[in-house]
Image (cartoon, rainbow, N blue to C red):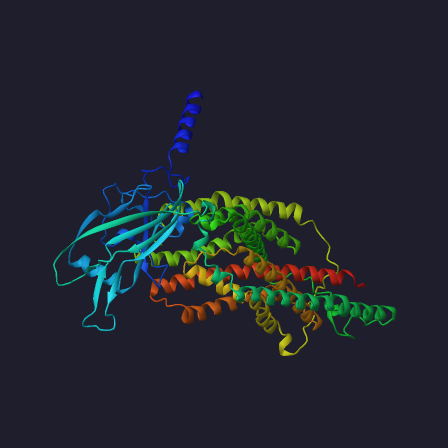
Length: 588
């Protein structure tokens, strides 16, 4: 025991006394590691490859791979020590750190990279840096076009006492001509380091990397305001329905109750009361709807927690922290999916609860595995750094087997045995379904479901543009306060749209509200995916099978998540509305 304590104190001593990139504290002359990450085309930013897959050399230090978190591995980060002997506060002027002999194939590969505008990413003290592999001269003259390779890296590093505040990278003024006519080219890779003091605090060093002119533009505020006005309009419309229209319906039905008309419940009048014997009928494909509801509720809670966590914690300053946190928070919230699904399934008389649990636990992970597996196959074919290593796949599978599934099962047991105590429906269910009368085309379920997603999509349209631009162009998204407001607005709009559409459907004497209320809001995901198609062709310059597969695959996964979330919010709101209005009606 004493030996363990002694070892811990020794380790703590070295941690405090020796500065490194983990505590971001350095002493003069201490090593500052330059980590090379990936390289790839400028306009296909997800098509990345390990930096040393191109014929670059590294310094005399042994090749060392950075310890990766789960999120870094999933994002395709491949951090390798470049071997550049950088020392804290030690200036360097045009010093050689490695030499490389380029053969004919190497020259051709580098020319291809320069022609494709390949750029690389690297990290110094966790600060991201990027630069181009080379440059092109006379690009418009095919006969005289020339390709040059940047062989010099000039680092300008700002520091504040013992902390690194900013790192800038400039290419050298003497790039090397890549001449395919030469059998070999001997190249020296050099670097320079200039240290400049600054008064910027360490806590504010990421501020200059945030593009406030883009994310905090007036258009962003205008979109929030317009979405808020939409919420006021919809909540006002719902209030009118609940306080006036429904009140008038109650008064009319009460007058009918006062008469001794034997047939008053058999269709002498029209309206939502006429379907009281079918409105609480078990919905079609109950098990599937239950699984969708459970998955959607889990994703809603997960999204809210992740947004608040990112908003309070400034997670953008750490590599892949948000992705890593999302994975484990998803696992911890799996009990929500099991509870919601089992409770809903049992409430409507479902019996095969084992299959219900399996479907709930596998519907979202299965979709992720199918889409991610296809993209990963493409990445392996291209030898991209985005290919997920096999050990990481095993780790993800273990998280699902030993954390997600047991928590889903636990939540299902609680929801089935305690959460779903038989709550009698306000109205008894007739043994024979009531015929659904013909109605106007805009009151058909298909029309309601298609047009129901327009308003929710309109409320998030601008924010979706900012999110897409941030993710697909590697801009740091930091305005999580905006995202949280838009998220709340989206939920409110979906709830209002679902209530209004459900009222119109029931008032046309159509009792098929369960799936309609789900699809009415879930159809928003279809509009988002349609917008992603427009964004791909008109807002980006992406090309190639890999980038296209990556873009449309993960956008489909994002849209599918919206499908589950918004569908569950719509159905939950409609359920409360339906139960509320039928509780206040006296039915013999």
